[in-house]
Length: 419
Image (cartoon, one colour):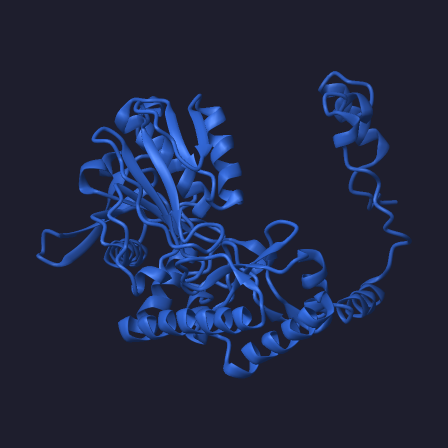
């Protein structure tokens, strides 16, 4: 009789013998016991019909109709249905990430347009065709600065996104680059100073003053700089999540690195270029290929393989559909909504900690846990906890007067309880 078991004891014993161990426990001895996955209490197996019924019952417990004022690096914004309709077509949606020289003209054109849009929005000379996300872009830009300046010390302001900072620490530890963090640094042998605007508290920051022999790296959210002058940093990095990308439970997103023309050969990833073919027609090609597959390993600027081509394509679709006028309108609405909410909260007695902000601000609630729990009970995810007293409130163009009024009404009730 045929054995339908995918892997039986005999198979396991033969596999263990081939690698020179006697048991599965011995195979995983190198992993500390506290780090090993425990057995999951899955219960008895279910057939497909029972499993569907059970999962449907579980899903009904989810509450999805909250008013969401969460931010801190990812934001729910308006996305035209055209973006998902086109990007999900079979011509674009693929399990293969195109990154070799054989990429189609269509994909190369999308990359070229993505680069052009980033440079136009941020007033930079050159952009790569995306990396994994904003955190990766931030870390890679520091490696880029270290190569350019041939120094192994960098200063990062301590008010950058904490998630980005963790990725930066890991990258720099692996590359023997000394990381200095704080509110200010007076050392002179830095490869770069890294700041974020708006920072983790929503504050719009001016570009720091640099010495003549160090670089300035700006981590930015693009949307505010539709209204304000973008920083004239040497390297500008960030994430495109706010430009046509759904929240997607935290990813995938796409990061970008844009820089002055003089630094383009140290950009990680690739650059798509526009040229003319032998018949005089417009053609696109990979102009810069800096990965380890393309050039000698020790000369590669990065070992990034995936360029998040599909996510970058979605951003391209979004920006083309929204257009310049639409983007300005969205940026204006976000700004006005945030300031309207902040002004009303001030009148209720809440302290707004920001001097200059775009669409995120930090508010002193007296007790973050109590405030957030109270608001959640009223159907509002009122912000992200910063510390025991302060929360970060993020406001987008999606909110109308009624929804902002709901926040104010519930916050007012909390203020009475707090008193």
